[in-house]
Length: 154
Figure 1 (cartoon, rainbow, N blue to C red):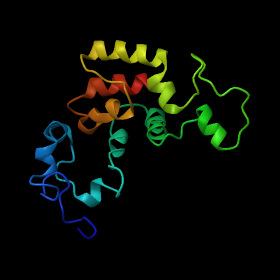
Figure 2 (cartoon, rainbow, N blue to C red; figure 1 turned 45 degrees about the vertical axis):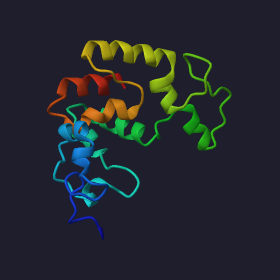
Figure 3 (cartoon, rainbow, N blue to C red; figure 1 turned 30 degrees about the vertical axis):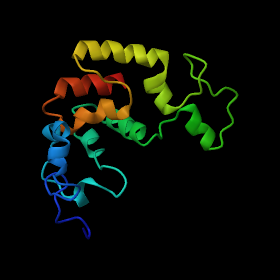
């Protein structure tokens, strides 16, 4: 593969008997970067889809917040503890579970209720994790309203 600049991520056949576009057609249909190379879309461990966050039609401060959330660097109690900040209470303000980014935005009973309402309004099942919310950010034009609702909810 070399540096990946000549191999198309979705369309070239390199895993199994067919391309990723064929193997993951539902995802391929909604991505904007259909012609992207491996170098453009893969860092060796993760997809470089975070760039989709920056193209959303939302305020810049929300862009930054979503970027922090995607990297699990927003200031939740677990992150503060990892930075050696002493906290008397590391539990979620809504329940008695340990506060992590994933818990606060997706697992907490309050978060689950909010996502259930948003899912019903949009007619889509979202909110189980960051990826389920952000999966449609790859095709911002097609899911413009959905993306505004989901990013505003976060």
